[in-house]
Length: 442
Image (cartoon, rainbow, N blue to C red; front, side):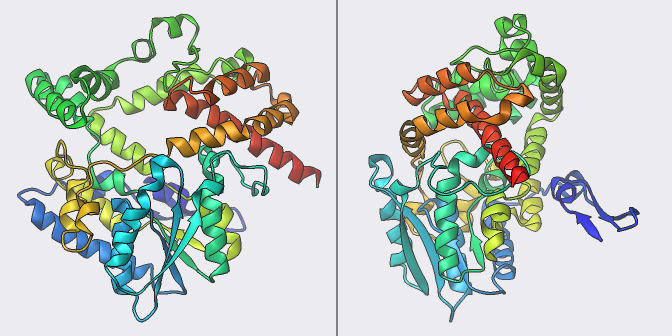
């Protein structure tokens, strides 16, 4: 008997498939039936219940074997470490930290040291982050995987953590992944306010966020209030519509067809129609809830756990995505998870007296943009050669010369992160296809 667990995690039906092809429904799951509004609760009360469920989830995931936890110095990974550390004695919790000489990330080591300085049973291991840049696929072989992985550009970073954990005999690695989904709001209630005709409230809320983020009022109002309500033709712009859904580099919309995708492929597989269906799904009222459900679907599964860690007998676990914690947090009033100027207010409240104060009250955490850009520049010759030599031509998807041209432009800083993600996804598809072809030949 095999069990289709993926649909259950996304919020569907858990199915059992028997050898004689009988399919039996074991359990139905609907997030919307589980998430029921909790009213008349204060932030301290919500934080107290959060920490109870958080401890419970980490304790249940700490029962078997040797435990390690990724520690980056941010609020999420540090919260996991501080709770797990107190639950594990007499066993020491192993922490795995990437440290950088890169200027933008060098200061993160100080926050890591703050957690260690609290004491407790921790065995700290540092890894050289500068040696694990993005797109570093050409030293160690890309592992087999059965579908393209958009996050493949992070492979080197994920692999060094798993490899060290394997050397240390670790059986479970904790990460802080998933925290954003449950401990902070998505601000798309601005679109719901506008749809309800509450323009004054929407403007007042957008102004509070613009001041907190030091952004223009229009940038907040358009992204979270107006754009989610627009049909595809207006969302992506009239020029994109006139080009039958094709975007223009370097300003690609999130759902525009990249110019290096061949027209015959886009037409045959109805890429424009699929973009319209996605917009329809996201624009459903309430928009805030639609984006929460999308977040739950995209959080399903863990590529590094399946394809890097599992073969070494290691599981990668994300305690923030414990179903009980998800249900509880998404049932809370939005005002407890979304306060302008206070990152993750629910988690901040829950971790009082547990996290070091400079970490608990951090307003900003440095991003990994320099790891991305430096990795892309250094590996560009190999990436170009991968594209040229790829067998993916037989699928008729890409104009390779256009893809290489935009890769070169992107490597010198042309194109924003959203547009760059379309390049990363295209390269991940090529790497996956060539890996599959090689496996079949062997």
